Amino acid sequence: MAKAGKKSTSVRPKVHAAEGRAAGTGGAQAEADPGYIWRRSDPPPLSGQDWLKGAVERLKGAPDCPQKVSAAARRIEPEMAEAFLRRQCEERWIAKSIENNLITWGWWPRTRPRKG
Image (cartoon, rainbow, N blue to C red; front, side):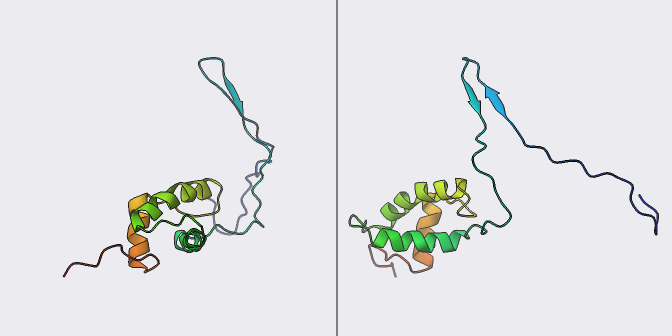
């Protein structure tokens, strides 16, 4: 540890462009895609709730909108997974979590009345 009043003498490492190559056992190769560069100026990804709200609005406007909440959740799940991979959404939820959130937040009606 540095003593009080003395400056650190460590040198910051230089930044270099990264390259990557993965070779499989069957001779297949894959190279890293240098086409996408994340910038600090990019907007932050949406929260899971905000992204889900937009997805529900898009789904309700679709001509083949499902009536059951479970069918809607199963349809939204792969879209959310892709949005998560593209850094458009902070979270990735499974269909049952999406279904529970749609019911809890009142964004999708239940197909049957609540018991009791």
